[in-house]
Length: 262
Image (cartoon, rainbow, N blue to C red; front, side, top):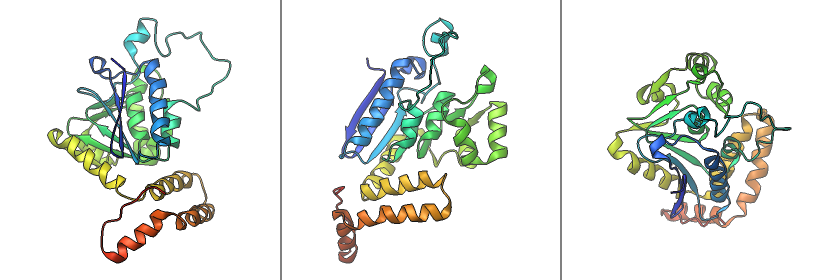
């Protein structure tokens, strides 16, 4: 069975971490497959939203520590230092740079690498059974996959320090209170809620949604003036799209627009 599943349903692509017997612990094969799936979804004109989730009871328990202790898997050879680091195709980088909106469907626990993956998505919808566990300090490592950049931006410096330094587990209700997830849903309604949100986003003009995401992402590092100029340059080609014409026409006619992504 594939360790990662990729499925399309209309305009929604769902990527599923698929090692439920190991709580979807990350293997080297999964890393390569995840990056490729994200690239494929981002390049597919038919896809408008990407959903990332896990099979079984959990989202992702992090890097596979059992494999590591058995002398195989990621990080198992401390002497295997690469001559140079090239992380351009690593999942956290790819996840951060795709233009399609990403939703993390947190069906259960997300720990370590799994927590970083969840935080790297644009939106997080959590089952009431979900929890985030950034226990890096308890394992003698650090959040290596974007967590040190993402966490302070999501919750502020002081709270990020508390979460990272203690390595404690945060249940779904507290995640919502801290702003780490957008919504907490009863588990039996979880999949329906994720689908509804993904569909609502997919119904909008895809080129505009992708431009909005791109400008907000770049705006994290830009000055205000620079971002305003960048946004204006993004706006001009959008004015010439069929979707812009359709959006205006639908508004004037009082109907739901039918966007084509052109």
